[in-house]
Length: 288
Ligand SMILES: [Zn+2]
Ligand SMILES: [Zn+2]
Image 1 (cartoon, rainbow, N blue to C red):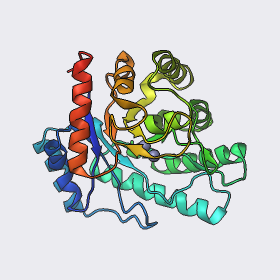
Image 2: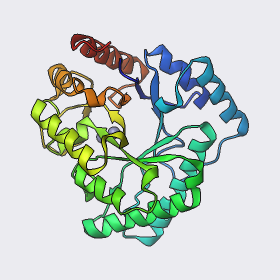
Image 3: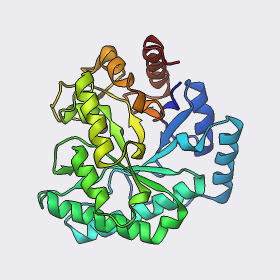
C-alpha cells in the first residue's frame, strides 16, 4: 500500500472543494498553491474558508500528512537583488501563515536561482531567508520542503548535495525536508529508470539528509531524454521515463511511505488518468 497518490489541484472553485475533487479523481493526497502563484500578493484566508477546508478534509477522510502546498513562482530566496530577496522572504512568510490556517504541514519550495551571482552566494541567501522565516514562524510547525529542480538559469538544488548543503547550514534544520521530482531528477541526470541509479539516489538522500526527510515525490514523466535540463513534464507513461521506468522507481521499499503527487499536463480529468496509470503500475509490481 502506498501512503498517498494525488495531483496538484486547482483552487479556482475554492480551496474547500479540493478534498472532494481529490477523491473524485481517485486520489487521497494533493498539492495546492496557497495563493495565485504568479502574484506577490498572498492574502490570509478568512477563518470561514479555513474552517470549511478542514471540514471537507474530515468529510473525505483525508490525512493532513497527505496535504501539500507549493510556493509561488515569483519567490526567489537566492536572489542577489536585496529588494527582490526581501519580497520573496515576506511572501514566503505569508504562505507559511496560510498553510498554518489550513492545517497544511508541508510547504514545497524551489530553493532559488543565484542569477549569475554564483552557487555559494545563492546558498547563503537561501539559508539567510529560511533562518529568518523559521525564526519568526517556526512555532507554527509548517515544514519547508526543498524540491530538486532542473539545472538551468542559475537554479540551485538540481543535485541532492546542494539540497543537503542548504539544509545543513540552516538554523532550524528540523523544519526542513525535501521533495524529489522525477522529471527534474531525470533532467539533471538521475536515471530513475535504472535500478542501480535509484539505489544510489536513495542512499545519497539517506546519507546526506536522512531518508525520513523525503516527504513527497513529484511523480512526473519527462518529455525530454535523460540529462536534458529542459523541465517539460509529460503524462505518466507518455514520456522518456515511461511505465517501465516508473515500475523500477516505485519498486523501492524506501518510497512506500512517501506520497506521490503528479504535476503533469492537463487538469483534473487528465490527472485522473495519471493516477489510474500509477495504480496499475503499482499493482503490476505487487503494491496495491
Ligand atoms: Zn515538482
Ligand atoms: Zn518542473
